[in-house]
Image (cartoon, rainbow, N blue to C red; front, top):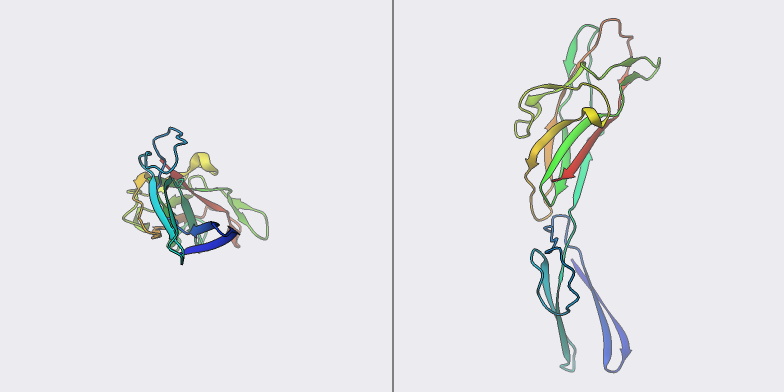
Length: 206
């Protein structure tokens, strides 16, 4: 969408402002890395060009050409409900399949990790993430998880790559989704109750 406004300075001068929304997927235009102050010219590779001409009712007109670059963009929206399992001590259960919605305008990787151990909401007891929680390859056959991977601990140092060879970005504002699914083992002697933990997902440009 393009929005314009005009400010009248005097009989011969107007200031015309044009605002537009390029959407999230406008391609990264980093330029050639050199700053050039030359105006009204196309001289920067890997940038986006525009050409604007303004005509008034009296036949007066003016035009300008210029360039712009858009920095790398990402967004990510995970589902609120993550590890949802029911199992007795000594057994494991697969979680529900959760969809992650994401958008990127440049090559990217996505990683996932637990910020904390599973903690009983009533008693404060905990289940260690390390060696008890795995991310399943069957959660999504299009990602880079080809075998089940067990988390070795919490925090980003023990993150697992969902896309590690660089995901494929889409153009024109198209969001994408990737599914994840976990297997959770409940150790013997675990107190009954509801256990929760925060999960973090991080998207990085290459």
